[in-house]
Length: 362
Length: 253
Image (cartoon, rainbow over all chains, first blue to last red; front, side, top):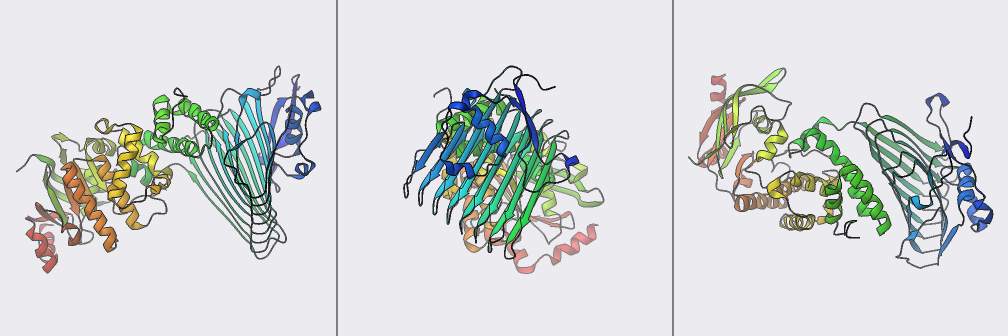
């Protein structure tokens, strides 16, 4: 029986093409606080955003909209190079007009986490982005908090002609994280570069769904996912490159590297390349396993024990996240998580090495 | 002789199914430069890896004493921290680990090299300049996508950063063009000058030795040390090859 104040988001974060259900890799179901009346006073985004496909699917979109007291709409005027990052709230729509440049930060905010009796404490982000022709959009996502039970993050991006979308995702914390992203490369010669880095340890569950819809001609997508699994962590990754009819001359590449530091982790990967056009290329590669013996030996020859060599991969995730963090909120969030995982000494060393101040120094 | 830094005595080692090194003796004094030469397949690289503690090889007899301590049973990481550095002939690619994270971690393992992160960045920058390296290398994954020459420069960068007491350079000069060879030679020279460390250079190429003052030359054939002499032995080998020694090696078997 469903606990009071709780609803189920059934089978969300699904890919366009699914596999056998018994593999339990097609989706995730989440118990979340029930829909709220907050959405009754909801300031809706412009109607155009209603047509943006989001990674976790319409069920999650409706639920987050019901929880958000307000929606944030930001428009970057044509030709403007906006240097100040746009910080996404629980529900955000960003319109990047022709030739404009924008940076968007999606940093898990636990202050607005949704809490109701008996329901898991849940944080959420819904971000929809429209990039017009020649626009350049950089999106940074950070999920790091451990003071909530679960996090859902659904992103939808539409790219116009010659638009360039760069996405850097860092999933480094939270007991249960589910994140989906759809990028529709609608315009000719539009491009997506997506890099996803993750760490799941202890009993964490991480569920990721990446979908690239390549509709325009001569579009390009590069999707690289890599991460570290430890303890009894469970990770599912669904990555779909959809080369739609009419996308002639397009190419999509998806590469995944998974490092498993424990025998008890569960790793599921579901790469799919859909193709309805002749003159296209879809590539996939995966490397899944433990650290290769020759790599371990190289690192041991330089003074690291076997365990330290493995932990180096974890430190590297945080180093990269800190280098990428475009604002202080993201940096502090990564640093807090680094302190929990690596200890304060290493965490402060990470940030000092980048020439930034530590948390204590503000 | 100066203080013995490395003393290999009666060392026999090999893989599970194949003996490679047989009764090898080698002594390197502190601050000395030794050259190890020999035909392909003689066991030179194996000796370097066995001294470093590579578990691929099993030591069946003999001992390795470094800096007064028997390290025959020690793991590679302990030997590294004791002051031995092996520069790889083909440095291993380590995807997922940026060069900066790696360098910082291996440096922090050495109490004598501990410094603030800011000073560390500055130190790495200085060495990178010395080796004509672009500091953008630091954010790239360790050895991934680097050319052969760039990988060797990264080995030199680590050598100068870690300042070991003994550096074993396993054909560091192989596959390098003239410019890269010049940079690597400068790196080795800087190591000798700045750290006064000892060198065991495994090479086929005498060009890398041009700027160095060689103390002793060793010749290995078929897993055995068959000759040892002064620096002039290198010129002799350059002129006449290894044929004379191969006969000796065969006789000793």
